[in-house]
Image 1: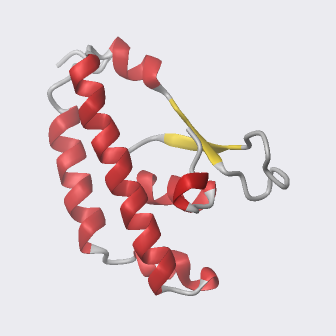
Image 2: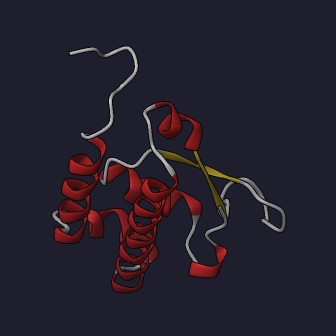
Image 3: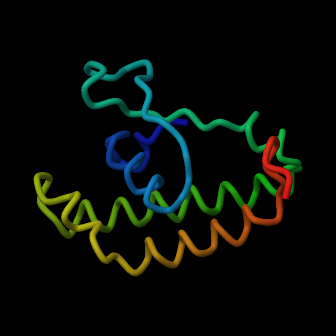
Length: 115
């Protein structure tokens, strides 16, 4: 997925997602000026399908990703580039999204972790 339409550095978006319990990784895409500040992220959809996610569930996942992009944009706008990570501390929107993600993910079995 490209983060360029949102004007988001991949590493910043990756960090917000990580804080919201969404696992993805930054990835260079065509048109980037180098791998140091990639403009894309890789989303591990096979891991979610192995947990039982269906097409409708991925619409929810997409909503989570869009909300994380919004949070990243707001923090990026409100804080200088060097203070971006400080702007994430005690962010109420991150806490709210993390709670929603954890509730959503808890309905799917984790392979290898039979309880």
